[in-house]
Image 1: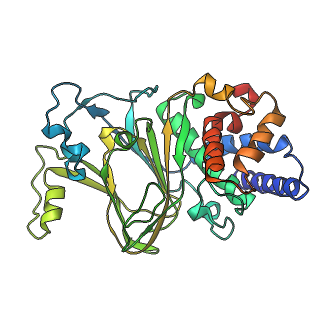
Image 2: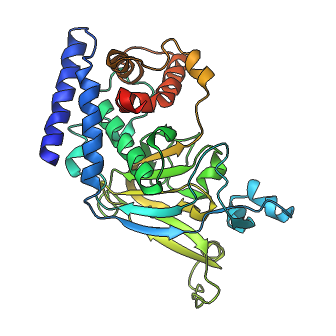
Image 3: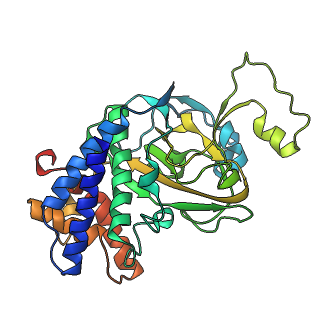
Length: 354
């Protein structure tokens, strides 16, 4: 049951804290127990509410693309006008032919995303972990692994073929403009397709760490689709010209974020989406993007320690690749995170699943 699972997780964190305090290796029983916890987490999630909408997979039109159609590359406002056709692009990957949107109102329980119990969870990336508690790091890993297993279950994917490419906590602040890439503050996200942003993004998730109406105002997550030709026209005359242009010919499906909820969806052009402007407060969320592109075997050969061959190897990877309680240069941190993501499946499953 969930109480037993959470008690086991606390025992794991205590074992890690003891090992680190004594400057000892992590016992192999730690990742072994985590593998059981990850299995249990998925089983618990499958008993909770889920709202699914199946959609037709879409990809950019492969023939006859006009110069006008390419405007979306240069103008965010043109993204919705890109000529599309049915199908899954899934560049260099092995996606299934099913596309959908899944809303889990209670993907994470309140105590699993408690900022007091897990300080820094709402600002965590896999970089600069020197001063982040083991509890927070392992809990973040646990949540991302829950996403991975849920995606594999929903889309019928072999778990070992699905790896995270990016996962980080992001802060959206009313009245600010995003600077730089992922993780930067900002008060909205323009209309986009995840797979257009990065060809390796095949499945996407957003896990919410704050609640609309309590922590912030505005900030809906919105799926933006072509309107059904037979649907009645919406009266837009009372709206600004910008909003009229955004809505004309489109069907907008908003999701109102709440703490612990998650949206999981295929990353193709069937799921264009945006985040509406936050008008007040701070909105925390964890975007995560997964790929089905295989890791070249040569990449493992170039690592200091390649694929784990024993339970002790797995425990060592948890210590050195994830629980990075040491100073790192930006280059060292980037290399560690890259190796962490490539070895994710080997760290999060028993040897029998390798």
